[in-house]
Amino acid sequence: MTLSTLTEPDGAEDFRIKVWFRFMPREGWLPQDTEGLWAALLSEDTARVQNVPLLQEGVAEGDVVRFTTDTEGRHWAVERVEASGNCTIRVLPVPAGPLGRSAQAVHERLSPFGLGGEVFSDEFPLVAFNVPASSDLAAIKSLLVHGVAEGWWHFETACVTDDWINA
Image (cartoon, rainbow, N blue to C red; front, side):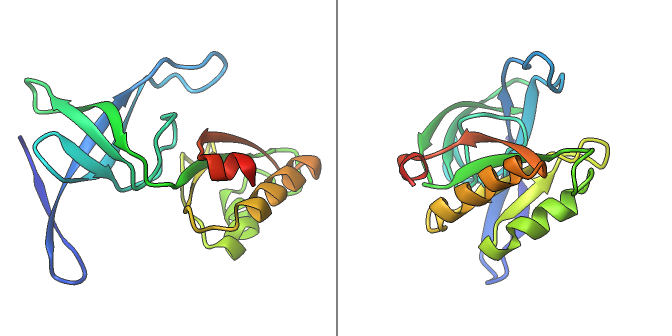
């Protein structure tokens, strides 16, 4: 198993690996069928996801996944074994809308909630946000729906909790 060492700000040493997920590409969507996510190694076959999935469904930052390691040393996710309580939401600005193709403008609209996220690319400004369990889920949902009505963006939920559904 190949491990890279990451020194945390408090000086503690942690081991990070890339865990790969396989999925079926969606029709009319990006052609990728795998996504690699950074994860903190917890045991010989489990790791905690450390970044927001841009493409993978059903997993959020902070979730613990079980993985297997192939003969080439690549770690493949097998299942989620512990949910973090966080949600993954994806937002794509409407190119002809008031935000244009600006991932930064999407971030700015959601900045009052302190959400972290990642952008797919400049050419395809899909923003994947991590929504912590402690967030004001009802207010975030309201803003997302408002943004659709205003023509700012389209959004989808990639991994949500019962709290999100009931907010």
